[in-house]
Image (tube, rainbow, N blue to C red):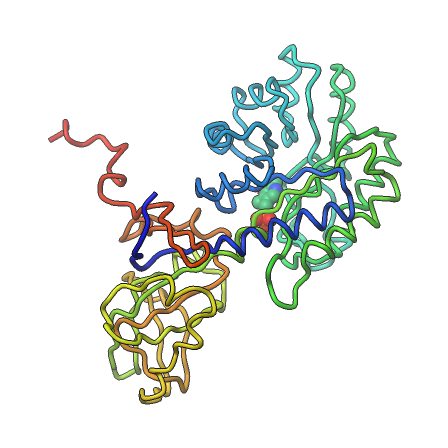
Length: 418
Ligand SMILES: *Cc1c(COP(=O)(O)O)cnc(C)c1O
């Protein structure tokens, strides 16, 4: 690991904030369903340093592809939850052989299982049901319906369970992960209620109920882990007890979104007929790769002196800027400043500042709560991956160096052809 100065643009992970989220989740589970397993969703942010933190916290790896499965093994996770509709046969059988928890999501997986001689394994079925009917306008797929899991309504779920029974494999659990637009408590009540209903209807004796991920975490005026877990306990208690059934949760964004900031620096300010553009060295691609957000949590750090100098964490740590924003007082007020990224896309614009002190080269703009679905989705567009630092007690450590030409060309074959 490298210690010391930081370069922008970069991500900064505030370790204390991450620890706080992990502790809050554990306490919420301890208080409500002491028999639990947390599977950290690799796809949300699979940065190796983050994965090691989650492993250290005692969490399982929650993976949804062969690549992620291999990464979990590489990172030394001894417990894996293998989900997703497209698993490779080899990794599927490997996971079962090693006793990992595998939630089936395709007919093909039942075939693979049947063809193998594996019988004493831990398998669950992912449940597909009409959640939209219960939580109108809340699911990501809406009226179109979701494609994951075996359908309750068509009988596919029951048939899958029957197939397992016929081949002599115990159905260990149900997987109910659903992504929603609202991340509301009501969604989780509905999922838990569905788990109870399935048990009552089919008489299944389940050793785990996996309620999935998709929670809010660390967002103002939004629910937190205790409220979700309390609701899940209330509903689940109608059919299950912690003595007999393990509650599995698979958080991603609620753990890793709050601790991460993205720091960028102002490079140029230019006036055109249309107004003032402030060009920064960051990009919308790094904090909003799907270009789906309409606003970003951000804060502005007006440079004190040495505008082109590098910033030390003491100047950029959460909250420290507010006290240091003094120099802005003697800057002229600009009626409108459009903050833009470095790429050559016109839509690489981040936000507009109105009636604020004029920005200058060397000022810093930080975007907060950007740890989920950012680093893992940023493209290698125009510039390579930025560095990532961890801030702990004011000390900075580099946990991923900026990608260079070397990493970019690594797996390419081109020399022999010329
Ligand atoms: C994406 C995903 C998660 C995590 O979702 P978050 O919104 O990041 O909490 C959990 N389980 C499964 C099966 C997923 O696909």
